[in-house]
Each structure stands twice: as C-alpha cells, then as structure tokens.
Length: 309
Image (cartoon, rainbow, N blue to C red; front, side):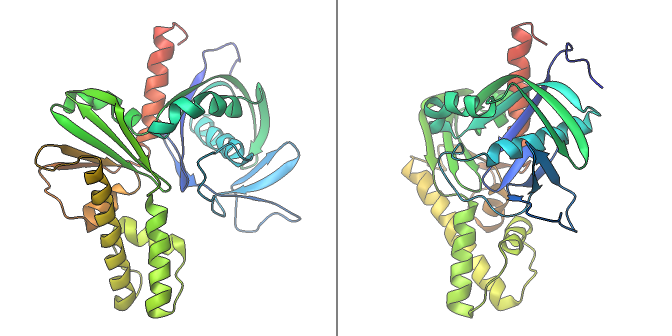
C-alpha cells in the first residue's frame, strides 16, 4: 500500500469514443449498469457509489461534449484501476493527464478538468480489488500533438499531423518543429463513420448485417473474416472513406509535394492499407496508446519543473 504523502502517480488517459487508452492498456469505451445478477462472462466489473457496471460493453454514441453524463467519469476510474494494478498499488494520489480535440481545448478545458475532479477522492472496486484514490490534479492537453511532443525534432520542414480517432479526425500543422495553433482543425470524420457506411452498404447490396466489432477488426488487420462478396463491399467502402480523408486534408491545403504527412490514431492502419499515397511522403504511428503516453510525458515534465515530482 502506498503512503498518501508520497509523490503522486501520473496517469495519462485518452478518452476516445471507441476505446479508452492509457499508457499500457486499451479497452472499449462501453459501460452498462448491472441490474440484478452479475454477468457470467465478464470480470471487468466496476462498483462505485453503491452501483455496479460492466466496463467495455455497449458503445458510447459520439457527442462533442463528453461531460453530459457520468459514463466517462466511471470509465476513468476503470482506467486508473488498470494502471494502478500494473504498479501494484491500490491506494494512490493521482494526477490525471488527459486531452481534448485540438480545436476544443480552449473552450472545454476547464469544464473537462472540473468534471474529472468533481470529487477529491474516489473509493471503488474493479475486478474485485478495492481502490482508494485521491485526485491531486488534472492536466489537460491538446489531443494528437501530445503524442508527438517528444519527437518534434523529427518534424523539419512543413508537416501535417493527422490523428484519426473513432469519432473525430484532428489535423495540425507543424512547421520546422513548431506547432501552428492557428492551423488546427477538427472534423467529425472518424472511423465510426466508415463502419456505419460499411454496415449500410452491406445491407443495401447484400441484405446482411455484420457486427461492428468484426468490421473494426477487418479494417484494423486487413484480414478477411467474411466471404469474398462481403469483403469486396468492405474494401470499396473503406477506400471511399480514405479518399474522403484525403479530400478533407486537401481542403486544409494538404499538398503531398510540399507537405509531409504524419498519420496516427486508430484510423492510421486503414490509411496504410486502403489509401493511395507516396510512402516516401507519409509516415505512420500505429501505437494506439501513443496519445495517452504523450499526456503522461507532458504532465510529468510540467510537474518536475514545478518541483512536484
């Protein structure tokens, strides 16, 4: 057990619409209250404030405001538990390191911090282990850029950072290692839009419905788990979606002859598999936890400079 007087534990959390990510783990952004008996096949049960929830089941709908309900707060507790378990801790002072889409940071930063810091402490159980957390602080950073903050030395010349998540796509220019705040854009054009289009096209052309999780696996791995005619629809729709990605980038003045493109986020593997591009001018970061790691790094550096670590 950790003495609460010790230095705080910094935990980076990327609150995605499809997945919650920390520096060491990733789980589906889903939460379902338990009414009655506990489910037989799930061990990811969170109990907080007298109520129990299955973490990782269901699917959060896209919303520009993540603070409309308590779901993301509860998912945050589950993410904290996973990270504390890795550290062999059940009691800790925690500094949360989180983020928001590039163009939403200034407007939502304080309200998101207040939402996550709504209680000074939290007592809960996750996977049958009891946790006591004291919230020491919450640092909020711009999504996407945080993941490459440690690699800025590699961004010479004109670069476009494209972070494709489940709900949004964030675009940012980095010129000669310096981010350009005036050239940040957020588009509601995440991977989930592609999944919905695939399901619609499969129903229209083949009269079938395929589970979203299976479609996401195919998009992520490129491996067919379905018959050829279904795969052909999935591939064509994915190519059209990636074509839409590049159209939106061109709307933001992307010119492959002048700008180097850096693609990251859950949709990066789709661009690599289904996109048409010059490999010499496009690079990828497929680490889905990269943003959470970046939040953790930036928060740790900030605390060290302040003499708090």
